[in-house]
Image (cartoon, rainbow, N blue to C red; front, side):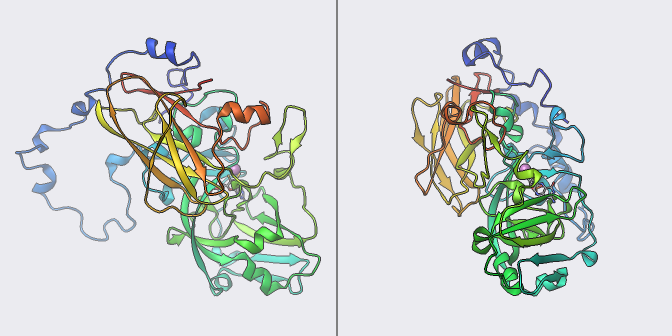
Length: 424
Ligand code: MTE
Ligand code: CO
């Protein structure tokens, strides 16, 4: 497995020009021939797989990707992994297309490992400032009216390591704390209506059944608006990693509040100020004050290919591909720069453009082998434009870890290799 902290893979901090001069070589161009495989299988020969019968139906009772896709996996970063139970793995964005993240590739963030819950023994309790406290089994939950919604989930710490400069070599690591799936679940509003809210109810506290009992305060208004108590992702039941059998879906808001393995919702009249919303997930500003409750994830985008893990392999026609998203609505437009932000051209958005979901964009390029400083810049339907990292730092200083939605730069070298850089 690639270790992105390997010094050879670490992003160049020498600035793009010296970086370019230092890393010549046409190693990658022409590489496809090397990948061509066994000539016996190429035309005009009859390949191995045409000469024999394949596996029959249901031999593969639960389907898996081809063995030739074995490197399309979640990865972690050693120096970010103090312990495996309280850590993060990253979505391989550079290896994916479209807007839906396959269930087995959704990044994971756990504070105390993956809770393995027997759904028959799991209950969701709703209590506090309600007329009728509820204790719901999974069967009870599945009897409520349900809806399907496609949304991104982004951890507030996504790109956090990039606040102080280009660090990690690959969009999997710089931007891979995001995924986008179709959730099936019950609108939280219906459960709260069933319990009956007292007139002084203003906040909820959601708590997980993992051993960290992770909990967060959620304003009642948001809960009544669009939150889901979800039990399915992409049609099948949630994966244990994603909170099986039930999690909170909080569209557009930071991932931390999407409590997994949801076991308790308490209704109150003020926030709880839990650990995760005080000492963590708050943004320390340069004057020493910290921003309280940054719930919404602002518009952001990233080019996913070419990137350090997905270099350019040919000169000539190439498709630049990437993702854009906004916690405030739909993506309206994405612009691409080939020269580090001096000139911008509009990218082509393709596929579904959904409210608070990943949105796929492409930009077609005839690449003559020149150095490129690739950037993407998202605009959402509120008119908000993704800022440069320099602009963000003007307002936020350099203490921040969370909520970095600055523009990413990838330096494409004449060899086709790509490195993570910053331009000033
Ligand atoms: N819920 C519980 N119970 N325990 C956790 O550790 N991690 C949170 C949130 N919900 C967490 C949790 C964080 S910080 C994030 S970013 C998201 O879950 C990650 O969701 P995922 O693992 O499905 O990607
Ligand atoms: Co998180």
